[in-house]
Image (tube, rainbow, N blue to C red; front, top):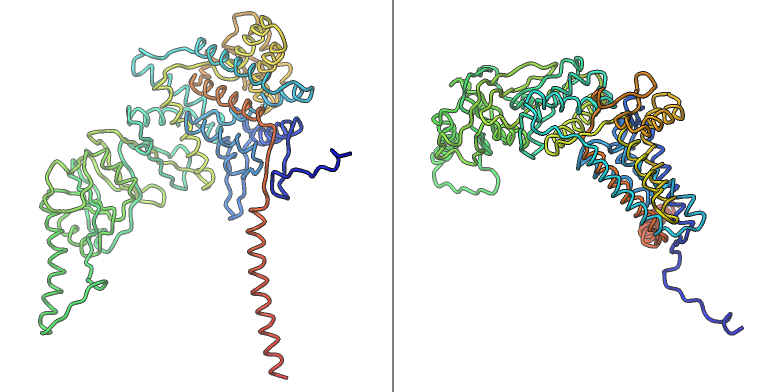
Length: 560
């Protein structure tokens, strides 16, 4: 009786939402599965696209896992972790974002029955970590190196990897055309890690085949003043001056006070302003530069001055484009026109202004350092070009990773089936409950070939049975789903390749996330802070409303 009368101990604020125990783990697993179901149908060459409409009226059409996850605006705290791994996969390797989300959700789905049966989550976590480590080691063992090949062979191999990535994208119909373009672009920036040296410019109109690669820099014609059309639009081996200053006549109106004793002195002040701008322009001309680019404005006076001397100029060039011109031409951006020496001037073989669709582009080609490239993308709708840009970004990242890591594995679900077979075989040597958990991990890996079949409209059970039989024979390690026929085929022989780093990263990240979500058994949510802000806003509105009502009432009384 005394124990019943003891007061309740309150640790958390009133209104705090706490969920804990086995039900909480199952709830988190269900949330992650629901998120994965959203991107499930986008996997593979026959994957569907998603149209996402945001509150600002913008629409995005994409089948890129990271883009979809980012735009979904997920609020469930556990499911948000899947968004993070999709982003990390995108930034680390560029492709495999849908794969990593599907694998993580499938690992959790396989763990759910055990959690419901009362198995401790840490038993599962331990087994999953062991299985993940074994799977990664197996991928490294099965990977084929492309090191030591000639440049032509390497280009061909890299194009195959890029084509595999692009086959699941909206521009998959032109994957060979874009794959070779991507490989040339990545090889142009050689070993430089800065991805911003590789520009992608979008021009609506035309067809995809009208897209082209510039071995150098291309950017849209900037805002120009009168006199611009009189400037030459093509140069051979010109010197290029890059500036970060304004070449405009500016009268000192702001923060300047001038007291004159004689009105005639006013003219000398105006003359001084003109002399300053003419002095700057003279120094630009004397430097020997034929092209002058500036991040800030180049005014109408300067434009006409340069036009009279057969010099091309462009003002308000974006910071990114100016840096890429500097990297390509070997020039240095100057913040002053004093003492401009030859060493700070850039150069290129050919500069020309070319019409692309409705836009005019300034194109610098044949650059000495050659560490930049620009892809000019053409296409019908804006959404289509946006998705094409995202697809090319994935392909560029894949080619860069393959160049650095130089190991590839067969795609089309072949590597997943081989690892699954290996883990099932390994599980038989484990005593105790861990055998079941490693088996579940192995089964979860089959989600990739199964989903490839489902998305292509094939009978997944039939294809998976054929794959299991082929892989268990010991000769079919490279066999995966054949998207064209609905059967199975040697992915390696069909050039369906992907960098080993994609698969390693995906398995690693998915295993980590599955273990992290399984280890969470309590969620604490304090709604007080949210409601406090809402109450403050409501009381402020009520105060204003009351004042308004009182004001109206007062006026009414006086009228009476």
